[in-house]
Image (cartoon, rainbow, N blue to C red):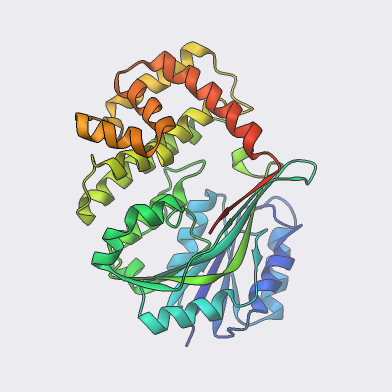
Length: 355
């Protein structure tokens, strides 16, 4: 019986894939399979994938034309035979106990989804770590009602953002035909998948311990490139999350919901407008902010009570939300520039840890 299928998209990853594959195959849980999806690589990745498969019968390789990370993961999901699915990128560090410890938690609680601690590092072209984010969780079980009650606490800690910190029950993916949406071209595909999986999650668990180290490298990551798809992905995930909250019975205009939307969708869009490779002028930036008002996920409406609660909870986000809700779009763009400057100054070469 295959307990966990690990899906790893590969694209021009000849520098990393042998090392990362070795970490996966050397995990203490042996009843696994590793599915390497060579997504039209132009370097020596295809040959290296085949070499890895020849050395271990638990490895399978899919060769396909380039379809992007969503298409690669979907190809892996179709072929996966494990009870649970895990995801890894070609240059990640899969730390000891990653699969065994989290699989045991999954079985202990009969969980559809397990999430655990992780490290995320942002590395510039020189190899310097410019941001390190460590998130640790407690060992805890949530039924559907507890998950609903704790949704915003978990969301605030980015528990539903990446996929590489989780084990996903394959039966749920198959039953509801869940997949990575290929319309996401530059980010947010993980968030969309996690949130849509969450709707069908009856039993959820978190595990203590840090098991995964994810790297975002300016030299190779799509995050180092700016185009309109990086903005559109945030809009799409905002729309998806609005539907998810509705299906889970969460009030979309509550104080918690509005602050969460600002944190995960509106403010990241504002920050992206001042991405280091964005050459848009003030007019074009303002036009993009203006078009957000067309989407229901960004149509914030406050009564006096809600506005007062938002102000008391988070004054910085309250100012952004007020100016945006009043359609002071040029002011929002000015605030975005200041916000980006503040983040760059505060976060560069710092460590942020969630307790």
